[in-house]
Image (cartoon, rainbow, N blue to C red):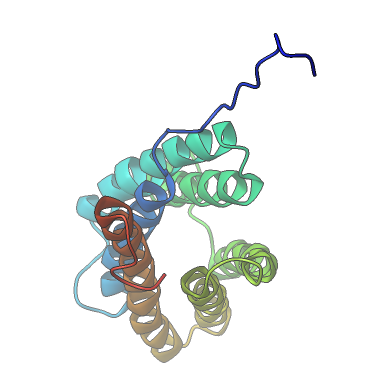
Amino acid sequence: MNENEKTVVIRDITANPAPLGLLGFGLTTVLLNIHNAGFYELNSMILAMGIAYGGIAQILACVMEYKKGNTFGTVAFGSYGLFWWSFVLLVILPKMNLATAPDDLSKAAYLFMWGLFTLVMFIGTLKLSRGLQVIFLALAILFFLLALGDVTGNTTITLIAGYEGIFTGFAAVYVGLAQVLNETYGKEMLPT
């Protein structure tokens, strides 16, 4: 390099999209699993959260992770954002007489495939933070429990899954809020 050439350093100063995605996933997961734990019926509050915060917020986080070159974040937030949309469609399409409601075996297959996907994504978290490891392992267990509950018709398994899902959602809420606080204060306030 000669003396007239200058080195330009480009620094990424865009916000971290992970907290948005984690909170969209976490809050929606908690609310759905309070239903699975038997506290209230599946209702429009859960479906609205699934479309808006669980779905749209995670898809936005996916696009932002893509721009940052984060393949894991792109795939995770895009996939789970679209999971929420597919979940809402599974509920509302039969109510609109646009499709037949899924039977227990097809719901179990749907949940099993999401569990398998999540288990492989968990392997990816082994190179990431402990908090993400907890979230993805708990989520894989949740999907498998829900699938088992549907395939066996055992409501106790679904009830247990509901409580496990509440834990899963709160784990994501914790990691998302910890990232917000850590970045806001410029130091580790909470481990992630």
